[in-house]
Length: 115
Image 1 (spheres, rainbow, N blue to C red):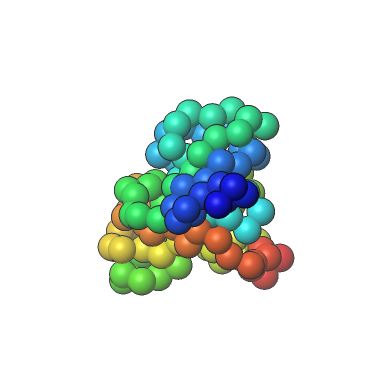
Image 2 (tube, rainbow, N blue to C red):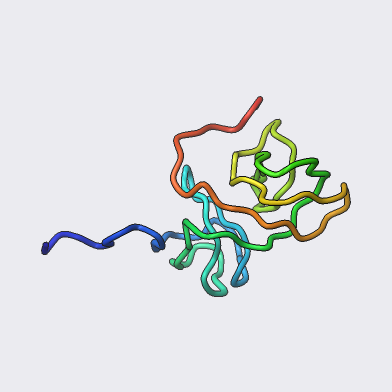
């Protein structure tokens, strides 16, 4: 099909709102994913929308399946207020910032929670 850009939409190209290194979380409007390569703010770069990733998350996660949120600056935490849903935890961790396996939600229709 001549007008098709992505067959399955598992990774897409977007304009990054902030600098990101490869493997870091990215939110662009209602799209949440993980940067494929280092990309500067304002540049177009590719993000993965599926899969699971070991990402740095701040805050305790008591059980699998809990939501993980992203701040306007691109940091992940467990605080819903004024943040956006980024994905789902696939493990548990203590309150300190540290690695957690997370599945990004990809596309979503959302606004900041409790903003």
